[in-house]
Image (cartoon, rainbow, N blue to C red; front, side, top):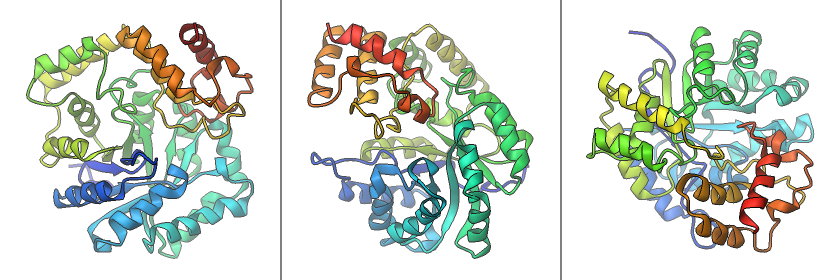
Length: 374
């Protein structure tokens, strides 16, 4: 059997990016505590957050729901440093100290340079952040260092060649993006494997899109096994790959947690017959036109027109995927009330520079304006 970092880590990780929210918009800490307790009681251990998630509230929730309530050796915690929100090297390095303070974790089991892609590599190098995280590891404040990645296989190969100190890579992998030429899930996975780096998988359900995929896909999956949930196929597809450290699921309520644990507590890789079902689902997905936004919201913060881009794309997909034209227009009107409309985009390009999916956001907004503002 292959030996690698995280080989024995349970293959379901708790992503703290999409935690449950109260009507006020604040994180629902009580429900989060229930979810954390259930996750740990099922034998799962890996928690993932980031300096930028929920403007720091995700890390604070990790402190309140996890760190302050459970023995430190009963879980592993990952967080990330993001140069996109840092104006100087000192600001970037300061994120590490802030994350330690917010979480109260004492150290991080896994620490990542966040969202590496061609446009940001120079800043990570200029700020000497690879040296910085290596120094924190030498001090014992980081157990394992790595990075999350959104770019081409060629760029990934270059990073792993230049920085062999990276112990693992976090990649977007799901059956919808497996052969997608932009996301390049399969190709990036193969590069990581070539460099013998274990993979943490993010977006296995593609921002929730594969929890409720188009009807043709749902029919294929449900017909194959009506006793399991639709999202279970996506999680198990990712977890069945070789060399996987864990698969992050951004669970937003207790029900999602219970469903994920129902099949991941005693995880079994996909059988050959189940793999053939996934192939048919992938073929069905190729026939559906939609905007493949994962609602990470990185595009929103810097928009000068305050356009709620992911919400608008979700509204447009109601029409594209489900044919719910009137509902799409109603939701669009509600989502843009007091905010920027799609037609108000000034094409500054900030959103496209921030988008880890490399979507042509400006073009999509023009289409949304034409379809939803009539």
